[in-house]
Image (cartoon, rainbow, N blue to C red; front, side, top):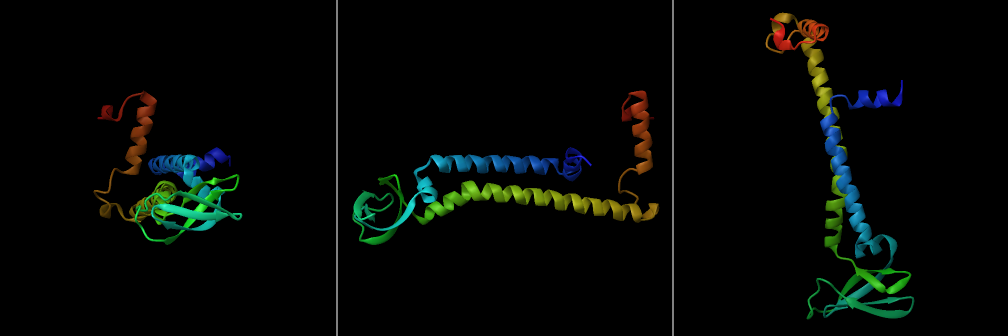
Length: 174
């Protein structure tokens, strides 16, 4: 069986779920692109250094040299507290101070879209499976117990065959 046919068979009945998952993946990729342009990229590409903040300034040492930077989010009159700084190995004067809020924002615009895309596809597969089981259960019941469960499959097949043969619509089948 060809790959395209396998993919079509697998996606049969969950096309809308796949579309939403692709949209989530696009947002996740956009999040990665934003992260790559943000100074917080040093979190992934820089060296982790212990530091401390005092009075709104972060102090850190990298390869024996002392450096300072503005500590965003730290008030000017704050006492001395430990901190973590990520330093660009090529330019130690370029650094980024880590805060726990950064984990939350990274999770929201990178991890969440990818997780949602997997969840949406899983929900589509589960829904398709439940509908298939319901159809099988209804098909195995005697006809008097399936009254009101939809059109008879034989009638639908005959109507579709007539429509294709005559080029008309289902409404012309009186």
